[in-house]
Figure 1 (cartoon, one colour):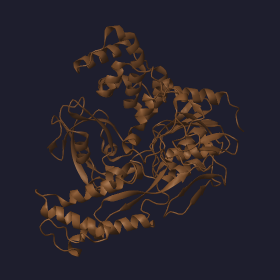
Figure 2 (cartoon, helix red, strand yellow):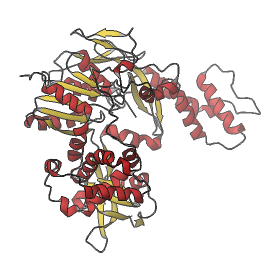
Figure 3 (tube, helix red, strand yellow):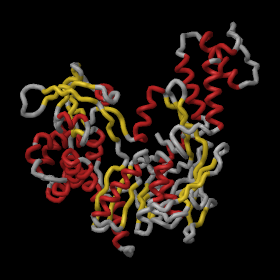
Figure 4 (cartoon, one colour):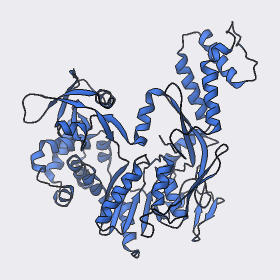
Length: 546
C-alpha cells in the first residue's frame, strides 16, 4: 500500500484528520452514553443535526434491533473503511491487527530470525540465512529443512507462508527453538535463536551494467532508501561509474521525503523538486540542496505503468528540470498525498490531505471521480487498448500541457509520459513458461536442483564468475521438463526449441539467485530486458560528462 508523507509518519497537524478522529472516537465509542436508548423501531436522536450523533445512534439501533447478533467492532471498521473509500481511491483504514505488517516495508525492518525460505514439498526450506542475522550467527545454513518450531511439528501439515511468519517472527529479544534436518547428518539438529531486527531492503540491486554505466533498481521509497542508495552509489563510483540508469519500474511509491532525498542527488541547489497543497495543508515547496553527488552526469530513469506516487515525484522532478531522460511507458498517475494517523485502539487511517505538483505545476493524478471501478481497472485497460505496445495509443489530455525550462512539452492529468517510449516485450515468454511461473515450478525446481548439486556449485566463488561461466545445458532442461510433468504440466514437443530458448535465462537466474541472491539474479534477467538495453545503448551514444 502506498503512503506519502509530507513530513513525518505520525504528523497530526491537519485539521481534517483531527476532526475525523474526534468524530470517530466521541461519536462512535461514546455514542451509546450520549444518546438515549433505542426503543422499538425508532432511532434515538434521529432528528439531530449532528452527523456524529446520527452515526452513533444508527450503530446503537442496529446493535439492539437487528434480527441477528452482530459484532459492533467489525461493523464500525466496515463503516470507517466505506467512508474513506468513498472519498478517493487512496484514503484507507488499517485494522490494528494489520498495522505492523502494512508498515513494515516502509519502516525497513521487522523482528524475526532472519532467513529467506521456500515451502517445498510441504517443508520449510532455508534458501539462505540473512547475512549478520540471528540464524546465521547460530549456524543455520542454506538447504536446511525446518521440522519443528518450539517443539511443534511444522513439516507435512500443509503449512502456509502466513503460518511460517506467525511461528518464526516475534518480539526482538524473544527466543525460538527450531529443529533442523541437514543433508549429510542423520539426526535433526536443534538451534535456539534469539530474534532481532531484520532489515527489509528497498533497493533491489546495484551493479555495473556496462563499462562506465551503473544500474540501480529501487523497489519502493522507505525510511532506509536514501541510505541504501548512498551505499550503492559509492560502490558503483569506485567501480568507475560515469553514467547511471535508475530503475523505478513497478515501484508503487512510499515516503515523500525519501523521494525528495533521491531527486536531490541529481539536481542543483535551488531547483524545485515538488510541492504539495491541500485545503488544510498550506503549499509546501521542496527544493534541492547542495548535497547532490551526481548533478551533471548522464542519467536515464526507467518507469512503467506500475511506477506510482513517490516514483512519479522523482521522474517528474527530473523531467521538468530537463535533468534526465525518462524511458519506458506511462506511469500509474497517482498525485495524492496521504497522511497517517494512528487511533487509540492501534488501528490507523491514511487520509488524502493534499495533492503534489511537479516543478512545472502539473498534477499527474489520473481521474477517479466518475467511476472508481474504472480507476482500479485502468492499468489492465491500457494493455487492452494497445497503449503498452504502441505510444500512439496513449490517451493524453492535450489541454494540460506544460513547458519545461528547456522548452520540452510535458503533460499532466494521467501519469508521467516518458521521453522515450519502450513497448512491453511480449516475445520473451511462452505459454509453457507462463504456466510454470504461475505454478511456482521454476522457483522450486531451481532450488532443489541447486541444493542437490551444492558441492558442484560451490566451485563458483562469486556471482560474477557464475554469470560468466555457467550455462544451462540439455540435462538441466530435460530435468525441468520431467519435473513439470510430475506436477501436471507437460510441454508440447513441437514447442521445444522456443521453450528451451525462453527457459535458459530464467533457470540460470533462479539457480543463481539461490546461490548468490540478487547479485546473480538481476544481472542475468536484465540481459534480455529491452528497456535496460535501450537505456545502455542511449547512454553509450551520449557524450560523456566531466
